[in-house]
Image (cartoon, rainbow, N blue to C red):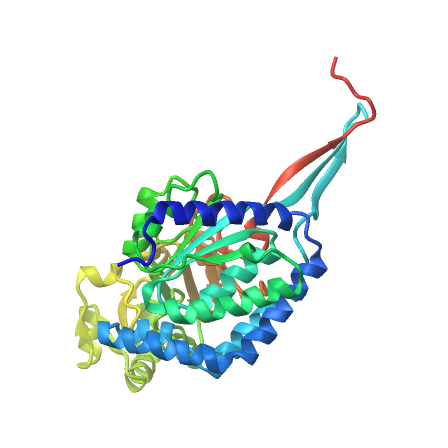
Length: 422
């Protein structure tokens, strides 16, 4: 049940407040936005115990609901993760302010001067599920890029996100910026999501972060433009011309560092010419790390611990300690598999051959193509963006990690001196 009698009216009020705040932010100086972020970071550290206590409530509810271990890992907060959120806010504050930056300028023969200048999108809606850190990441990235934000976290993370929001608002207040610049929908009623999807008078874009069902719903029902990806079915391809030790280290990290994130490798592709030298130690290391291995017939013949992979496995985002393994004949077959079964998120090749690497990197359709590194680097923070609001696998406007620059658009500024067009 909702605590609010009229969800539509509630969302309209939130939308109006956000739009008013956006009009203030478009002219807010960089110093004010940066101060808000730094003060919010300090507040997160000062209130870490309260945030952890709120998170305990969410974790207890999540366990009662039977959330998977991967979902609980996404939900859990501790001192280190809160410190990471605070550091993320500070790193965003140190980024160059994109608003007002001149992308290009030129003069016309008639004397007109034309500039293409970055401006905020306006109001950004973010709909997410179990990750409370999205509250800090999304709110701060939107603020830095001059956008107001409306955050709708999942019921699983409601208490954690609400407490994190208090720190963000403390930062806004300290910098004399409108507190409505970062708002969170104060109800877990799903009707609020339906309202957000049609708020074309107030929202300029929606970013869904969650499972397939959430993203599919947003993409199907939204009347507001969407930055989204459905899944992260990421691949690591081990080419024959590679170091067995490097391949083992990267594959284990790409799969097992954090299995519940969208950049985790779900399928290992390996050259048949590399199987004898590379695959046994990789399988041993994955098995020792507690990973279930599902493989094609050739891989099962090599190792009795490997479970038979079905056709469905090649199209599955496990978000768990499970990996599928397939043997291929060279880079062309690997690229074909990635483009048929991948989701254009993040895919990696491990090879010492530069020409082979280029064939893979240019051939796959992925938003992020990686050479000799873990797919788990698919993260805005690792890209130097401070954080990200999500990974977009679309090809319009924003692609890959969505950071502060991707949360802006541009306008043309035309300057004349009494010009009239003949």
